[in-house]
Every structure is written in C-alpha cells, then in structure tokens.
Image 1 (cartoon, helix red, strand yellow):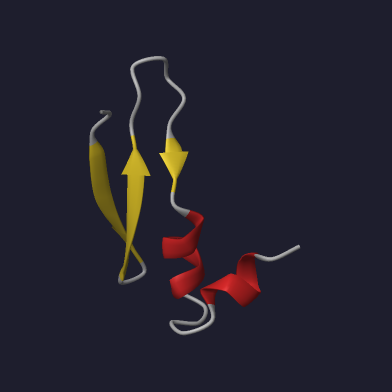
Image 2: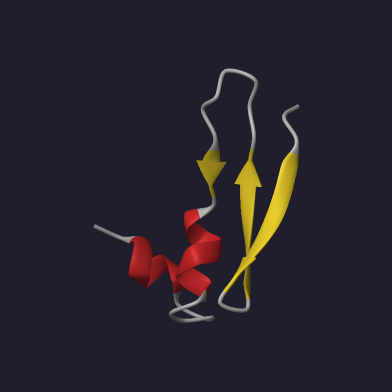
Length: 46
C-alpha cells in the first residue's frame, strides 16, 4: 500500500497518497470539506 500523508491547507487537513511511479493523488473530499463540512457530495458532483 502506498503511504498516505496529510497536509494542512488553510486550516483543513487534506490526504495525499504518494506512489512510487510519481502519480500522486489528492483527496477531493477533504478539499470539499473546506467549502462545506456536511455536503461534500454536492460540491464534487458534476
């Protein structure tokens, strides 16, 4: 399993998944929590 770390941006913790092949992933749900703690699904939807 790839290591997951948390970074703090504007007071919000965001998970970042680091992989050996340089394809890193940032958790969109964590980023959406900055905008609205309860309705992250509404922010991410198309």
